[in-house]
Image (cartoon, rainbow, N blue to C red):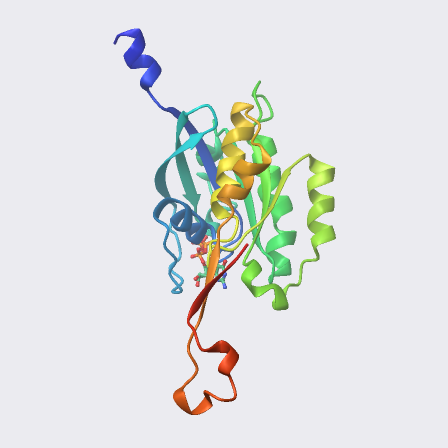
Length: 221
Ligand SMILES: Nc1nc2c(ncn2[C@@H]2O[C@H](COP(=O)(O)OP(=O)(O)OP(=O)(O)O)[C@@H](O)[C@H]2O)c(=O)[nH]1
């Protein structure tokens, strides 16, 4: 292979997603890699893989190899093999399920154990998922922040359902691993814009709502 061919090859990064069953790992992976979301819960048996190519500042193409690891693998024989050699770890919990946050200690212990003798440590991020269900939150944000500070972890709050901050999370983890700093504009660009449609009122309500007679799209960030 010539030098120029080699240079044009993408960097490949392995990122594992771990955490309790039903906290939304598969949903995060499919939202990121396929830009879709399914309401139906289908348990991951063993693991699934996703590939997604992104471009980081400096026109650097990076292919993320996302390993979506089934929540039932904790305590099983294969988990250490799945985690081995990874460059990034997303420790995911469901902000409406306190137990899923408490159990992260076990998941994190496994990551530390696997990497005990390794020279390079993976970049680990704590990810609170399902922020579209903020009204049902049982894990306070300060508990999340404390866990991050005590263990030197990256911190994210996301929603696989709405897509809120999902791309940003994977992009920042990739950038951290490669030692690339994202500027404010790049971060803002990755934050999803949610579009809300304001519809016309029915004819009968015309007088009452004369101020709202046109259909508009309003963008929220
Ligand atoms: N409201 C809401 N529901 C979500 C979100 N993410 C996932 N879910 C739902 O939570 C359930 C579990 O999601 P999965 O992605 O299958 O969970 P998992 O962590 O991969 O589960 P295992 O395969 O058992 O490890 C599904 O019904 C999803 O639709 C989210 O951000 N918001």
